[in-house]
Image (cartoon, rainbow, N blue to C red):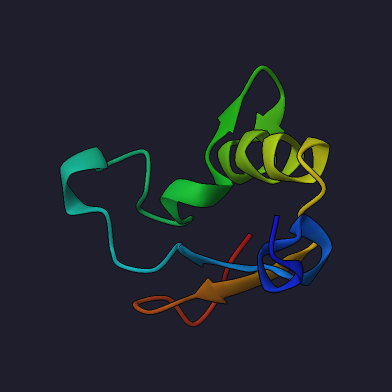
Length: 69
């Protein structure tokens, strides 16, 4: 595998912004990524899966909220 594509060198862009109007009222005060499933934020499932593959660098694209919980 080419070194530029080694998991430890990759950066993953994760879009987590937006108002998630289709999920109202669940997203009235939080983002989709922060909604909880099995007592964990949804985004955690993706991050753990990527981390198991050796990817450690994440960029989060956030828009639409000024206060995340």
